[in-house]
Length: 107
Image (cartoon, rainbow, N blue to C red):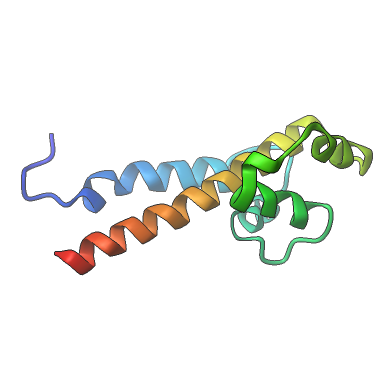
């Protein structure tokens, strides 16, 4: 059990590292480099660039037609799922980093 002097960042850093490892480096249909790129959008080509950007920045606008376009481009449901999770994790990590920075700035 963490001591009361442990920071939130230190307490959860192992969990975050394990999650990063599983999503970005673990086995899957999508190449690990592609999954890492989905988290930031850097180095992606279409149709992944637009799709993962939507997942990261405007997930509420995704529709079945977005998925259909990826399938029409030859991507499997497993690849689409993995890229979706990687992009969503990228957005979550960006928010986590911003929150932790805010806590450091206040403390």
